[in-house]
Amino acid sequence: MGKKYKKVVVLPCSGIGKVYGALARETAYELVEKVRPGLATLTCLPLLVINDPEAVALVTENPVITIDGCPKDCAKKSVEAVGGRVAKAYEAIRFYKEHKDLKPEGIAEVNDTGRQLAQVAAAEIAPEVDKLAAGEEQ
Amino acid sequence: MDIQVQKVGIVSCSGEEIPEGTLCRLACRQALDERPGETVTICLPLFIAGGEEERTFAQNYPTITVDGCDKMCAAKATEMLSGKPSKSLSIPEILKKHGLTPPTKLRHFGPEEDAAVKAVAAEIAQAVDKVLEEA
Image (cartoon, rainbow over all chains, first blue to last red; front, side):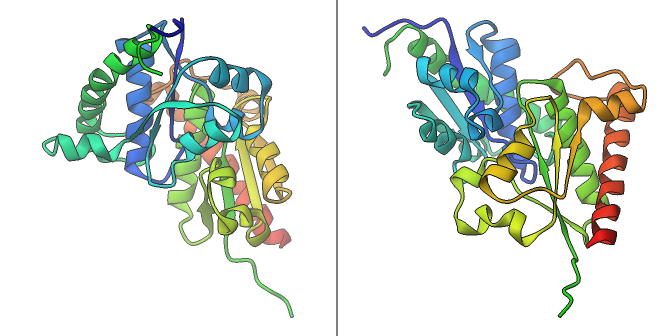
């Protein structure tokens, strides 16, 4: 078993033009606020873009889960660009593909169905958060 | 030859960690939707994750950055990685100017946050007009 962590960083896409960017954020908020509060933590992705020392330390000293909204993988690449290692990378569309009855809509924020899908996605990601915090998966 | 500027780039901070970031995204989205022929946007992290096309964004469009806090990520990242913005807007300054209270939640904005979203979107729209006039 590896090192244990008090924080697992969940980093969503910053996109403001696509529904899956909004779904990625909603999923991250669900994890941080409701599903794993106190353990899952967020930082602003743009802070990594400007090399903010606190944000860089957060993603280099703790396990990171990224949730991207499109194949450009901004969240994942931004972590890697500052020397962080992404422990688990998700693309938000995957959750819709696995739950076709929950079609998300909306651009800046998802609709009610999108919120339901984010709850499902957060529940699916939560065990990964636990494993990473326990040092079981590196 | 004079080149007429037809579109203004809007770069939102996105700030996932702070309520002002959500306000920023919603207001930028509203401004983009209200001025579809005159505005275009880019996801800020694409300055790093994207290709040459994304990195030359601020060279191809006069750009307005909108930031949710005094770290000014959008303004700094745009200048550092793409080109100097034409205007830099700050959410805290706009809220102060309009006597509005900063939002307190990260998501699910409703009627309580509506005035703030509209005020920021209106400031962005005014900035778009100015940039187009000055171009």
